[in-house]
Length: 190
Image 1: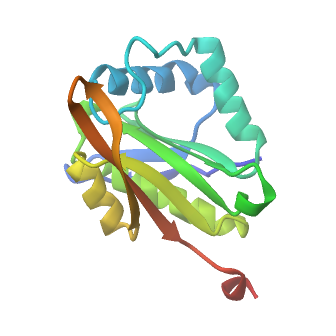
Image 2: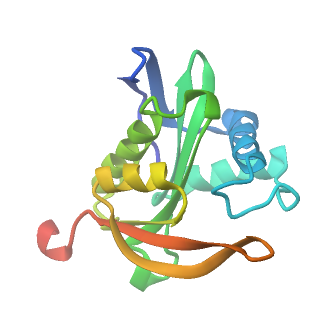
């Protein structure tokens, strides 16, 4: 079972944010965070018309993250409201089970206050504690300069570019940047 104990952190405006594992009771709030990010229609793979997640399926998604020791969903809570979400899942096949990918959403009202940094640091700390996860990967839209800056600040390296990978409309393409952070190797674990 993957979990993260409650941790309190200060954000740039001086407020305190709680960081913890998501639980099934959070399904409505995590669904709302995802929905609001998708409705922005930028920096998302899924379009609003494709987003069909129900409250029931969101609860099952959280349950899957709770049940798998190498999956985790972490929330950020400000004033008793979930304002951020980061989730990670490792590869299912043996040869990629030491790696995994994450996605992150932060409510527009609290962006640029450091919540994303705290969520990502919580994920990195959790991944290191597993002794299995050696690398964290991500895919980011090339025009999402703020996110790319955060990932670089947190030690992620650009590993590749998939040109014209995303199509926002006729003639409107965006590249996908592949990034990764190596946490440990077999030699480090000996």
